[in-house]
Length: 323
Image (cartoon, rainbow, N blue to C red; front, side):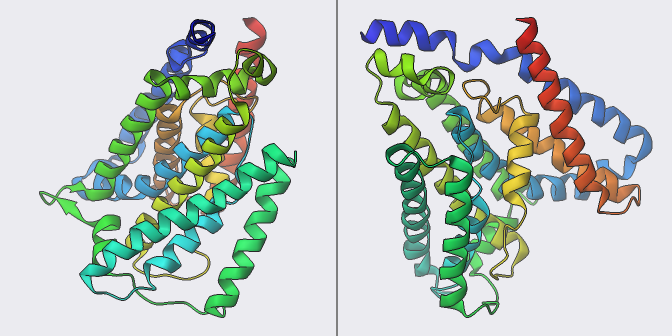
């Protein structure tokens, strides 16, 4: 039975999705050429630093979103998890020893939210869209009641270092964290049996169940991981902004979906990976900064994101039909 699982899942592993990654890489390369011609100021050391810092939280939450999309899910609660993580970050004071409380608390709380999402979706058959949307509203209400809707002020120093600190005065700390999480998640999906089973569950849940895979457990694990990633992203974003309120992370639920889809993660499940989602996030950050450097009104970013999703879905749907 294990041999059957390995044989089937190997066909669905990220290695079979190399063309999609090449497409995204080509898009990034093309954008870089256009930017170099029209907005060369974006390639100064300071500008590159700023873009890498901006990529940190979006890249982390996009990789988590990719995990639930791989199992035919969707997580709209990531934004409220990010805000909750930010609020927790400012709740233990500025003492350095608070680090020992903040990080475990964020991981436990965010993981708990993901666990509830996963259980409701798998055990009660609630649609992922409705379940995570309801969770967004519930958690947002609880958080607002606890904080009375008021901003909580600045973040502790170690959270600020996580969000905007530099290594050797050039490499952002959150970029190192992002790369570490990207490598670890890609390794799990490609080399660990449970990670490879994610693709089989997303591609054909019934077949996965027939070969002995505990499909509910895989799906729940993806939702827990997504929420944990969002919690970490919330701490990074709070440190970057150096300001905590109940709206930290607003809009990241849509941006993370756009990044994942742009990075080759199919909304139908079973295709894509976290590295692709990370590349998609890089494209969004690059486009956003490009628009700002050209002086184009900021609301055009929303139009751009909508067009990106439509084009990406159309491209991947056509590739699927061709196969």
